[in-house]
Structures are given as C-alpha cells and as structure tokens.
Length: 381
Ligand code: SF4
Ligand code: SF4
Image (tube, rainbow, N blue to C red; front, side):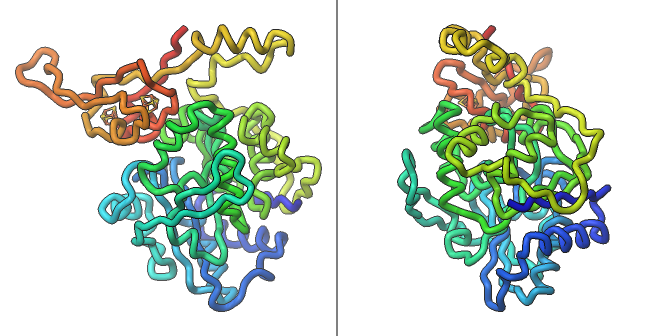
C-alpha cells in the first residue's frame, strides 16, 4: 500500500499544487482519469468556519486537486458535503461562503441538490443500507479530502470519519442515537466507508486540530499533506503522526481486525516522517480514560464499574451560550431545550440552552455544533 507524505510548510497554492502532483503521480492516479469522468470531492465542511481555523478542509487543497483534475482532462467536478446541522440551500450557502469554497467556482460545482438515495451496504453486518447524498451516489469517482483532528467521541478524525458527512443533515444524529456505544458507532463508520468506497483519500494536515475536536480544539500544524488509495491504512498511519496509539482508536482497531487496514504493508513515498512530532492533546472526553493501561484480567470489571464514573457529559457555559439552538437541533436524544432564563443582574429574560443529563448518550454532537465553544465536558466522577 503506497502512502504518500509531502512536507508543505504553509497554505500557499504554489507549495500545495506541486506536493499534490508528486503524491498523485506516486499513487498512479492519472491512470484512473478519462474525459467525461464524473468526480465528487467530499471535503470536511462540518460547520461554517473560516479557512484559517483548523476545522474544515482548506480551500487551497481543494483548488490544487481541481487544477490537477482539469490538467488531466476532467472537468465534471462537484463538491458535495452534508455539514453538521441542516442540509438545505440556505444552510449550505452559508457554509460554502464562510469556508472559502465560493472562490473555487466555476472550476468546481458546489452541490445544491439536497436529495439522498438509499444504497445497499453489501457487507453490512448491522447496517444493511445507508441513506447517502445523491451526488456521491451518482459519482464515478469519489475523492475524500479530510482534515486531521482529534475527536470528542471517536478520539480521531481522518478519512474514515470524514465519510460520515455523506449522511444527509439531521439523519446523522439519528445514527448516533441508533449506535450510542463507541464500538457499534465505529462499526457503522466502517460499513459506511465500505459502501462509499472512495478511490482516493487526501488528508489535509498542513494545519491540524488537537484537543476538543472536531470543532472546538486548537491548531497543531504538522505541515504535511497525506494521500493514499487505502483510507483505512492511511488512518492508522496518520494517527501515529499525532502520537496516538492507533489500536486505541476503536474504528482503526476494528479496521485492522477486519483486515481493512494493513499497517505492515505501508510503503512510504515522498518525504520522510518528521522527527520532531509532538503528541496531540486529547479531547477532554478522553483525558481520564486510562482503561487501556490495565492488565487484561482487570479490564472487564474495570469497564463495568468505571463506565459510570468516567462517563462524560456536556456542560454548557451560560455566559458564553447565545441561545442559537444549534445544539438542540443536533441532539439525537432530544435532551436539550432552549429556554428563556432570567438575565443575571438585569430585568427581562434571555434564551439559553438547558441540558438534561438523563437520556444523554454522550455523543457530543452538541459540542460539535456549538459556534461559540460554550459546551465543555464534565466527567460524572
Ligand atoms: S446532550 Fe449532547 S452529548 Fe448528550 S445526547 Fe444530546 S447531543 Fe449527544
Ligand atoms: S450551547 Fe452553543 S449551540 Fe447551544 S444554544 Fe448555546 S450557543 Fe447555541
């Protein structure tokens, strides 16, 4: 399995484009190209954030990919994503504008078809089909361009997790509700990735996110651009670059067990792995989880007793909360309401989010969607 790694010091088109050319050439991607090929680029546009924040795929990485496709005779290129929150014209226009995607037109078509199709999942153990946004279903060739991040629920977000954005709008929280256990949710992500089966996955790690990802963390630049055909093994490799143990990331562990990720077969092309890599800060949800360091015979009793104590819950900072309702909209368990509360030290009331702990499945969709970082994590301990 060829894994490419290119050093890219900053977001500059003149640096990104040659790095992409070298990567795609090492992977032999030009052999896949033909006139008339219908290509869909699936970025990470989880929320409307400007490109200087390490939340979304940087537009210059996408621009480089589009330029390369054009130079190989491919012009039918659509950018398709279902962000967190609603999936409609008004919502996605704001996401496209804020995330810098508008500047990519007209070389790239920004998807405005908000329909979805049911697609069978041939090897699905638990998910026999998925409802997937139409452009991805109709594409001849899917290019998955994600952002490297830590993630409150899954611990890590790269190529596999990015494909969750092919599920339309608020159907995503429904899947969280259906699979509240991390093991089941991770298996669903793998089944979804096998259903979408992108031909190429690029990881934008020029700047990456550590801490309370996927939206509330901070910048941790790696100055690297990664590309591979095999997204599973690439995620194993990329987690290692963050100094995370890939076998403690449930979706990667399952991918290795299922034979999808084959870390022993990595052939590195491009630049060497930098020597000065530093560990990524973990999300608050994962900080107290030391179960992985226990002797085997203690694991089961530990998990049983500690699960309740170590369970993480969201906690809202009333000062910061602006009452926008995005958390309530995305909560699959419907345990958040927007209520009018008294203004401290003033007359009248103001809208704020109110959380009920009972029923919360700790999926952290609410934290993901909060535009002002008003939601933090509290351990039951
Ligand atoms: S309150 Fe937040 S963490 Fe709990 S179920 Fe709702 S979205 Fe998930
Ligand atoms: S907690 Fe965040 S997402 Fe929820 S209403 Fe307040 S500001 Fe909006």
